[in-house]
Image 1 (cartoon, rainbow, N blue to C red):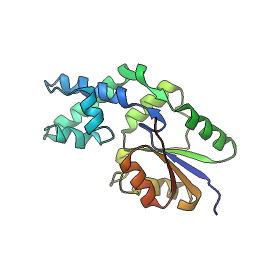
Image 2: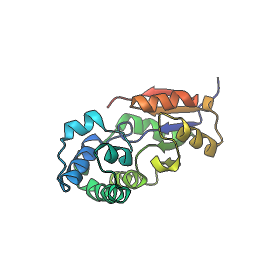
Image 3: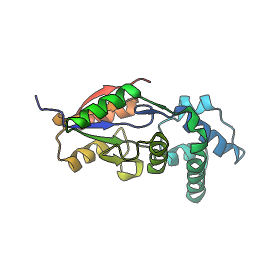
Length: 186
């Protein structure tokens, strides 16, 4: 059995419970456009979906308008950070793993700006060896591309990698990468 040298963490719903903050930011952004959805609807149907895909499903067909709304959501997001919750047990494990020479990456379908904002808010902006966000790979989860790219950049094999994920698409991507994985439930 190979020694684990690399931890790959999903971000939203795995390392940090961002569900309510994300939902509230989307609800507020869409409300400004006269589109009404509830926090519960967003969480049940769209949480974890790339922003562009979500806005397309909401009937926003113009790419420029989707981009404007994406940027507006990013701007509103920090105003809902009072509801963020760090997964303390997972974070303690990651700190101990790094102290022993292991490497820890965030691999998320989320936007890099959103990830950076949350990490800054939590004081963790320098705590990771790398971050791959939604637009860093062509094919999002459930494709294994993001996990495989992080492994490639670290020079690790799937046998040397352990993935932490919370969603069905994330665990499917982890399994497809060949790495061992653990399902996280916050």
